[in-house]
Amino acid sequence: MAEADPTTPEGYQFFDPQNLACPHAGWKMLREKAPVYRIPVPAKVPVYVAAGRDEIEFITRNNDHFSTRPDASVWRWGDGFPDEIAEAFAAAGMNVVMTLQSTDPPDSLHYRNVLSEVIGPGSVKNWRPRIEEIIEGLIADIPDGEPFNFVEAFSVPLPLKVICLILGIPYSDSAFFRYYSDEFTHLVDPTHPMDRALKATDTIVKGYAYLRERMLEYRENPADNLLSAYANAEFDGRLATMDEALSMAHVTIIAGNETTRNALSSALFTLAKDPDLWARLKADRSLVKDFYTEVLRRDAPATTTPRTVLKDVELGGVQLRKGDVVFVLWGSGSHAEQHFDDPLAFDIDRSNKSAHTTFGMGVHHCAGSALAREELGQAFNAILDNFDRIELARPAEDISYDPVFGFRAISELPVIFHRSSRA
Ligand code: HEM
Image 1 (cartoon, rainbow, N blue to C red):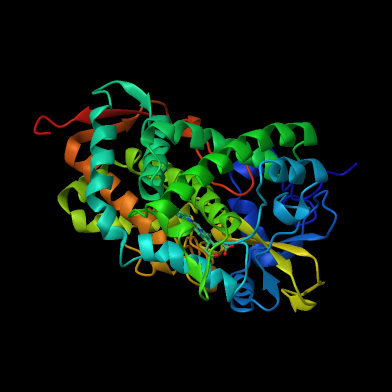
Image 2 (tube, helix red, strand yellow):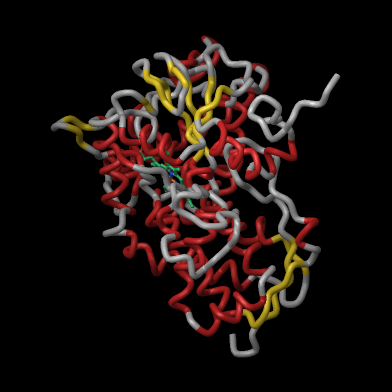
């Protein structure tokens, strides 16, 4: 039998591990040949990907056609729960409801306002000194001149501790919330078997119960943190229900961790490979922002999120029907040739690098982007302050991205940092 031609949408293996780890050739082919394309997944509804920039922009402008409320066959959460899972939450006196990221305007706007008040562009600076302390602690533990895995030593703990700080959760419980985030994947991904999903449900119910306890305390004694803001939020004159407050806390934990983790890892990988870039940043700190912006453009940490089609519509030459699912490929939008020459090249001098789609677009544009940028800026300034030189502890070709759909993640990034004698 003739081999399928991987340069065509029909022949391209979307779920081949190599293509998942490096989706760029597939995205480019889709942008050229099939900006909206139905992919072969075992879901109950037709599932498409949108790779074309115009099509991505259309989706984000037309919220009456495309909802962020997830379809159960691609996201097993809330609406799509099998009875056993719904019962596990109900037995603990809780219901999973949709709030941040999974509702549409106007509801979604009420929810994101609560988050934005605490960590939006106007308020993120309030957290700066405490984030600096977290970074100082992580930098102090980095070994001098010896190999270590940057992901576990830095990319994982920084966003995790920052989210705990902002929510008002003690750092001593941060390890549980890493486990909680990892387990969540087994629950929501409908390709994971039910017995595994049920095991994961135990952890998520425990996490929900923990968050509820803290939020009940914050209803009694409000504090300057995000759990307290969620617990005491008012929408149109009514107090948020505990289910809504729990949902907002949950989404914040999930949305704020792995994304920023991947951004930190890709940025460090880029820097450790390029001594000239290191020297430029050392000499001119005003370039740090350009540096991480171009990393975000080239290596979108969260490559895609789904939309559910609300009304029949033709897009990219394809007829979409009510109920279909479209995964919006944010990573592909950030490589669109009509905006970016040589889109795979890392070019810190690119004038329009912030025209990326890495944080989404429109009414659902990332509500945590100011915090992510704050963490990236502070982290790389601290690394540049404290070290004379950094290098990979393994050839770059032997470091790879994980073969996963949805994230551009690195699990192992072995590096050697040489501490500055002045630090
Ligand atoms: C580099 C790090 C991050 C990246 C790449 C990223 C990416 C994204 C993307 C692509 C969306 C749009 C989703 C869609 O339209 O379907 C989004 C939305 C969102 N993000 Fe982020 N995110 C990051 C960090 C964070 C952080 C740190 C938080 C919170 C602490 C956060 C909270 C949210 C929330 C709540 C939404 C939903 C907004 C809404 O629907 O109104 N994100 N993010």
